Image (cartoon, rainbow, N blue to C red; front, side, top):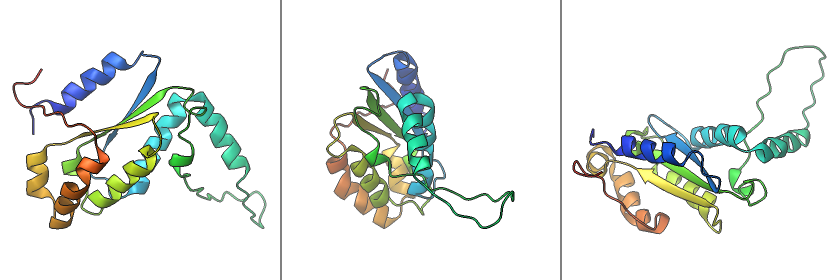
Length: 173
């Protein structure tokens, strides 16, 4: 820890904020227990970054009908966040590429498994050239803190889920 991985990534994100061809969403996995939590973060960020996403969301909500037999009663009915893989297309992303940066993998809650996370990433990215993913982690810390199932899943799926690996060490700029 503490060698500047997140700092380097944040510097890159800041330098790219005004580029027109892509948008970046950074997701800290620190303490995250489920794919639903991760999905909700991405969903909220998409709402703020893409006008067409808001239009899509309004259309989605207009097709969700809820029937309650009591009028004028403040009932909070949760509407599930939709599957984002159906949304991430050229029209909804306004022709831009989307970079999802997942940070703090080694600090995720054990309830969120690597197999689940990598499967979710695969669903978002498979057959979608507009969506790219960056995973920021301390492999040594992950190896020490992860359970055996997560270690095995990481070894089995990492190269299938990610095309390139960049190593940032204490001497990296």
